[in-house]
Structure formats: structure tokens, C-alpha cells
Image (cartoon, rainbow, N blue to C red):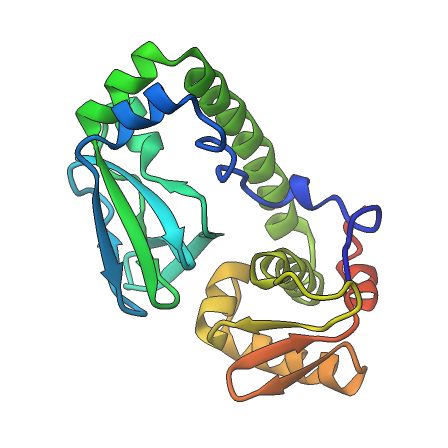
Length: 235
């Protein structure tokens, strides 16, 4: 079902998929003139933190996790990018190295756009510039909400909220009442929530007992998003 009117998804999810939508043909051609499109297998790394930001990446099809690696080698997922999203433009705009790493969560098709082409198009396209500025402003608000969430909310509420957000990324064009299947590992969910894997496994079992969701292997099927929203207690 749709969560429009039930949950303010825009407060918790990055929105870069609209940056290139309906861009004037001349601008799009300028941007894509030297593009390179590649297929990535599940788990493959697209770029790593501290690598030179040689360009940006457009998710043609698939899902990508953006994450930081701590001193112990553990991952902290920042967000999950979906089809249509752009990656790496923050580092290119700031003239720094990539600020995080990116790896595909499923077999994906990714287009690489060289740094010079991106910056040149940005210089010539007022529309692209406005959209990037709007996206950066929105992402700041999302990060502020996420920091507050991690600092003050119990794990059960944080997991419920992240399942709502991830559910939107896995939702297909089915009927409004159809369950949504999420295909993410428990380790990735734990990294996204900022907790131990054992906590995620325990709380998912609780959600199953309450009829909120069911599991098939690593797949999670959300059957009752209204109950999940109640548990998230986001207001």
C-alpha cells in the first residue's frame, strides 16, 4: 500500500533521482558525452572512501549502499541509493576525495560520468545547478533527522523506521495493498540501523510474531506497514 498521508517519507530519505529527470536534451548530451556504463555483480564496490573523485555515478538499474568503514573494519551504512539516483557528486563539488564508499546490494547497471563533463554541464545548466542545490539542502535535513533518531530512539523504533524507508525503495508497481519484499542481509540492516546483528534478528522475530512481516530466507516481506509506522513512533 502507499504510505502517502501516513508517513513523511521525504524527511527520512535522500532524493537525488529527480536531478536528471527531464533535463534539456542539450544539457543531457553534454553530461553523457563520455559516459561509461557497466554491470556490477552483487557485492561489488563502485568506489572507495578516500579515492580520487574522478566523476559521478548514475544508477541506471539496481540498489547501492553508501557506507563508511570504522577503525575496526565495520560498516556503517549511510543510505541506500535506488534506480535513478546519483552518487559521488558531493565529493566532486567539494573538490575532495570520495567521502564514503559505495557497493551494489544486487546486480546493478551503473553509468560513470567523468568529473570534467559533470562540472562543465553544471556551469552551463541553471536547471541542473538549482536541482543539485535543492538536493543538498534536503539531504542536510535528512541527516539531521537521522542523527536525532540514532541518539534518542530505541533500536526497535529505529529498525521499524528504516524498514519503512527501505520498503519504499523495494516497492514495485503492484496494487496498493500488496506486501513489499525487501532483499537485504541482516548485517546490512544492522549497519543501516546502527546496532548489532543479534538485535536486528531478535526484533525481526518479534515483528513476525506480531504479524507485521514474514521472512523467506534473508528476504523480509512487510505485510502491515501501518503497524510498522506505529512502532516507528516518528512524530
